[in-house]
Image (cartoon, rainbow, N blue to C red; front, side):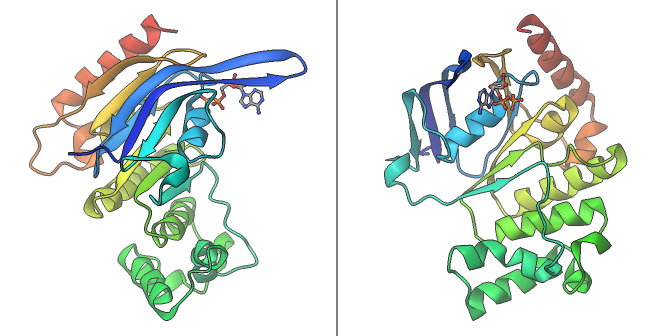
Length: 255
Ligand code: ADP
């Protein structure tokens, strides 16, 4: 199978008047269609920088990126980005927030509006379509932000700490929810997180980064023998502790 994303020897440093901050060293990995990859690493190691490079917001100093076999600049692969804060606009209803990306990309049509309604229904927000974001719970807001991204039908979804602004209990349930939604939709996703439990509960593979400048310390394939492989069931499975400890050890060796 051809990877949907391929990174080879990516290096990046920030430059300002005080000098240079090296952020990434020689990062190479591939992601395959339908795969869920979690990237973990110490705070400030370069995780967000890596996502910004993958979606073309910043250009690497060295190395190459291919999307579905094409160089990033020639690629038509559609990338969705979901951030820590939902960035919903209070002056728009939930439905009109969900349409925002479609509007910006001039993709509003009867069909895409219909798709937005379908997703709102599918993910339990139908009755809040006309509500303002402040009328939703934190978890529902994050779900609305996900729908705003999914309605653009991204081939790859980049998730930058998308649950970290939520309280612990909501975080567990939204993580479970969103993980399940993405799996059912067979979406390829890359999740950046500093929460090891979250990484293990959601991923097919975990990439562990070293402290800044980030290099890959280890890639760990994650498999669970479960009848129902959901993030919540994983948290209670015996393998969970094994993967958690493996990643914890790796992070502490490379701190
Ligand atoms: P993480 O997402 O792992 O917390 P980041 O990718 O945000 O880390 O940042 C990696 C390093 O690069 C940090 O030390 C940060 O201070 C530095 N950095 C991030 N953005 C900039 C910038 N615009 N200018 C200078 N340094 C930056």
